[in-house]
Length: 142
Image (tube, rainbow, N blue to C red; front, side):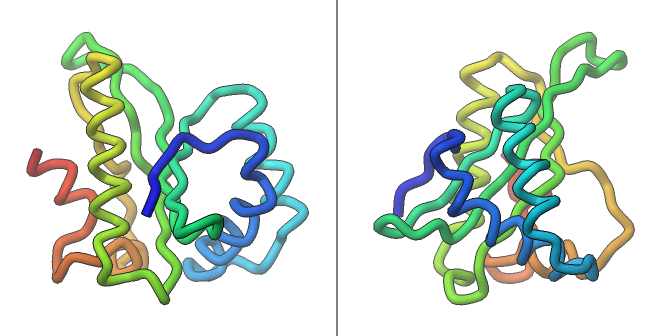
C-alpha cells in the first residue's frame, strides 16, 4: 500500500472515490461536479489530498485544508474529508492516511490536525477501520 500526495494526474482515480464518499453521506452522484471540484483543489493548491494506492488502484483518500488558529496563534490543518473503499476497510488504510496527515503536520510545523466536527454518525462510521475509533480520535490521540 502506498500513501502519497495526489496530483492532477490522479484525477481519474480520485473522482470515483470522492463521488462514492459523497454518496455514502447521502449526496447524489455527481461525477462531473466532483471532477470540477477536485481539479480546482489540485490546481489552486488550496487543499492537500493524500491518496492510498494498492498497486495502481486508488482505494482511499484524506483531504486537508490549511487554516489558522487565533487561539494558538499558529496554522492548522483541518481534516474534513476521508474515505476508504469498503473492500479495503479493516486493513489499516485509514490509519496509514492519518499517519501521513500527522507527518505533514510535523513537517510544516503545524500545531494540530483536526477534523471539523460534523453532526453525522454516518461520517464517523465510514472513517472507522481500526475497531471503534475514528480517524479524528486517531489524529487527536497523537
